[in-house]
Picture 1 (tube, rainbow, N blue to C red):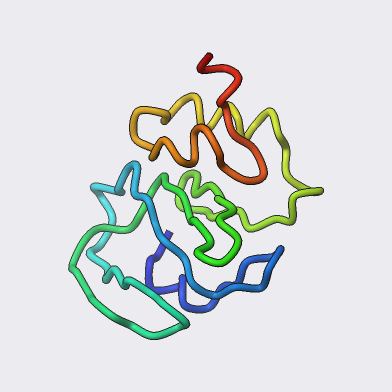
Picture 2: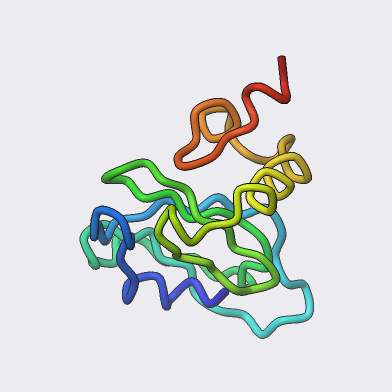
Length: 115
């Protein structure tokens, strides 16, 4: 995922435009891009890193998470998301994802699988 594209997206549920990004893996063979910490579509900080391969976009307004898988971020309303695929993603990367998403993530989490 090109991090500089994040300022063009909005949460499909609450329409919020401010996201946190959790980087799980970066593309090592990708040309260098710029990372922006975005709040209300304003650039706060730039860092020179590689493009994001796998990660999570977390809406700061409604706290829903959206997966970034193989450079593609999937911003779908809850009714169009695949619960099994989302839970598999959380299980696969649970050591790299904050506990708040693992245990209380919206719309899906794996709290019951951890108990």
